[in-house]
Amino acid sequence: MGSLRHAVELRAGAKDFSTGLLNDLLAALASVADGELVALHGPAVLGPDLDRWARFTGNAIVEVTSDGETTRFLVRRGAPRSYDETLEVGSRLWLYSNFDCNLACDYCCVRSSPRAEPRTLPLEDVRRAASEAPGAGVREMFVTGGEPFLRPDIGELLLACSGALPTTVLTNGLLFGGKRRLLLRELPRDRVVFQISLDSPDPSLHDQHRGAGSWEKARSGIAIAREEGFRVRLASTVADAQAEEGFQAFVKREGIPEEDCVLRRVALRGFAEEGVALSRADLVPEVTLTSAGVYWHPVGATDQDFFVTATRFPLVDAIAAVRRAFAEERRFATSLASVFRCA
Amino acid sequence: MLETITVGAVAYDPKVVGIWEGMRTYFREEARVPVEVVLYLSYEAQVAALLAGKIDIAWNTNLAYLQAEHRSQGACRPLAMRDTDLEWWTEILVRSGGGIRRLADLKGKRLALGSRDSGHAAILPVHFLAQEGLVEGRDYQSRRFDTDLGKHGDTGTSEVDVLRAVLNGEVDAGAVGSPFWAGVRSSQLVPAGAVESIWSSPRYHHCMFTARVGLPPEDASRFTDALFGMNGVPHLKPILDAEGLQEWVRPRSEGYASLREAALRQGLLARSG
Image (cartoon, rainbow over all chains, first blue to last red; front, side):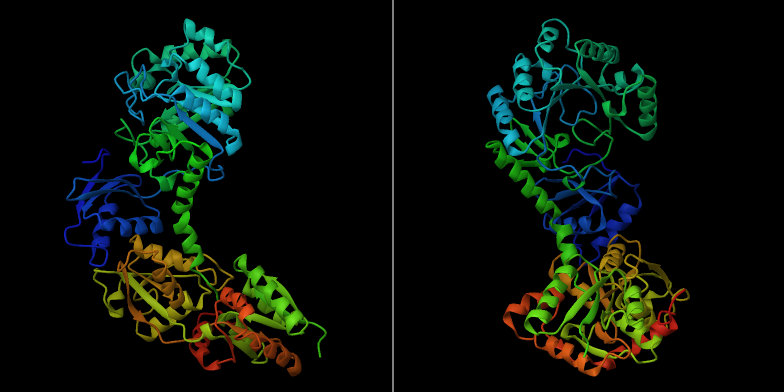
């Protein structure tokens, strides 16, 4: 039951919060480090109390699964790195163009691979999203996957998006040869940015995660995109501070501007067996559309806990649904602030 | 008779501005009492202004009222208070199902306290526990959260920190005021039954309108008559609700003896610095 790895198991037994369960939970959490997980097994009715406790104390429930008889609550000790709370909900729109990929990166948060079901977002849906986005308050679009350049209609898709708003396309950069290079030339240089993944300054770590030879091919893809006149951002998914520092030094040596470098930690989702365990409470939502519906954030675009609504259109309603979910998420903090009177 | 009666209040939260806009409008336009309002960001500044005669009346916490009284040798008089300022108390909270069931079990344990200038979350719990034979530092270790110094605990933020420390295991017990604890439970912000009170303190009173030295009695009466005139007036209820009362009441001085003694002993009555 459940997919995320945890460090410690705890069974509630007959206990609940009024009969000492909290002390047992705290003892289990004290035995793990910040960011690590404790699996608490107990009845589903523990859920609301556990959620209140987590919100009050700055811990998080990152996964809830059930086998019908027992529920497993995965409790993360402590808070992850802070995220950009100034980001306006609905200002960014992410589109998962597809979920299949020419690679099978071992930390992929949405389990993309050559064997994954494509779950392609229909082109007409992309066109509709693009046409409705500006009026709905979206200011920039992101196209990701899987590998978007596996789609035969990727040119039309990117033209639709960039025709409406500045668009960033996330790609591994390995598929820019042949016909695809020709379609790059049809895209507006001032409206399309390529975000290409490069996880390390040399092939070692990158190829370990993404496959032998992928680092060299990514460098070639970066060069092609630049030759064709596009702005390229490098995106690096790193596991720890040492890898982060190594990549920052590499970026500096290469003369790449800081604003063209995206560094993020591996999220403990999808294929990843290690990384930062995240819940909704940790992330300001970035509205994400897939063929299955609307999600809280691209990092959890195949996970039930990040699912918001199956109704993608009208887009303004989808964004409103995410905003309502965010307000509900913030309700705790708002309620806490309103408890006080003076004095 | 004064041309203007200047009233000071501490803006411990943005909502205070709206409350005193409403109060000022009522005094000037309905009660025909020429009140002007000055907002401060700390009770220290407000008490200093009252003692310097820069304001005529201060809307004080219990500690600020006693500071003004002490530093004026009793010349700063109480004028009025809220009904909800009567009969506060402090709760000592612990996690349910643990080994702490009574005060004596606190020996050798860790106790969280709120801001050191908070009567309900720091000054009085330390005082009352000492009366029960538990001395800070000797019998228990305190973990103090000086989160809103200058506000005398008004914001509630230090009590949130106290409760959080109990819930996350950082401490064994915590001291919070009775209104905060009632609010947290009624809002269902903590798991039901996860935290319980093992002891409630003796009662004490809270905020008090305090007059400056030499405020003419007729001006004090103009102010308090107008203040009590707000009671039971339907269209003024939103202001009273915002300020957390049902009605204004005459001063009740008997509920300040314990805080007076505690604050004196903890060096919080005399001017600092």
